[in-house]
Amino acid sequence: MATHRIGVIPGDGIGPEVVAQGLRVLQAAAAADGFGLECEQLPWGCGYYLQHGCMMPEDALEQLRVFDAIYLGGVGLPGRVPEELSVRGVVFAIRFGFDQYANVRPVRPLPGAPFPLRHVDPATVDFVVVREATEGLYVGQGGRYAAGTPEFERWQPLRPACARSREIATQIGLYTEHGCRRVMEYAFDLARRRNGRRLVTSCTKPNALNYGMGLWDGVFAEVAAEYPEVEHEWMHADALAMRFVTQPQHFDVVVAPNLFGDLITDVSAALLGGLGMAPGGNIAPGGLSMFEPPHGTAPDIAGRGVANPIAAVLTAALMLRELGEEAGAQRIEAATAALVADGQTLTPDIGGRASTEEVGNSLAKLVLHS
Image (tube, rainbow, N blue to C red; front, top):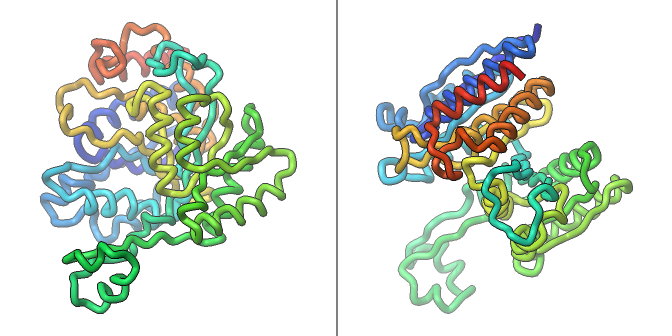
């Protein structure tokens, strides 16, 4: 019997509530399919910051190396901890530290979930967004410069507004040939093994971002030539976002740079019924991956028992699949689909009256007895 060690970071806001239900469903799948789970809770995040002045201990990455996967509930307490500290202190620190370069967001609406498009049959929508997660504008390079500094003077001739400003800021995006290539190969490999159209769509914007997207487009052409059995296409990010609304059934696998991927995946989450239904994983192929529902911490509803745990549960299924427990992943996904189709045990965000715990209990029972 395989045993998987999971580092659990419940995080902030609703994170502990939804992670508790995700773990409940995971344990049910383990009991049903005969594998073991060893889960260790790590109390990192904004609560830890308010006590210790840092989001994680200095040796956090070393502590995490002993696990087979990381399960994260979400990090952030807006108004109490600056967002740039919370995100960079945990999520980015782990993503960058373990080179989790493929952020994977499946988009397959469940029957019975809210679907916002009248003109599209939700049963025809089934695609995955693969977002590059370690490069682009998120690398944290640049600065803020006051008038009179050498850096300010360097940029001043670029735009007339600089001369009328007291301060300017630069945010530098970094794109590497290897970084582009590996996430594109991941996307093409995914398209090759999915039961979809075998189509990879590149989300790009070379008319505005001539250097970074110029490199991105050139590498995409090279990678596409290595997969002749998979179709490929380029689509500007703004046109692609519109197409998610007008014709989402067109897509199979979308590969996107970091910022564009961040934006379009929230658009795609609307097709699932909202962020409370959207699973996500940060994949380091062959290494330590982290799985987190992308809905954030929602501190406005924390502690009220109404948070939707389905995103966390489906994220747990993604984690099992990456760990090689395909049967357990399918069991969780089938139970979730049955629960949503039945419509009797849903949280208020998708039209129900059930509590977070009631949804988790029902899913665990479905998984255990399926």
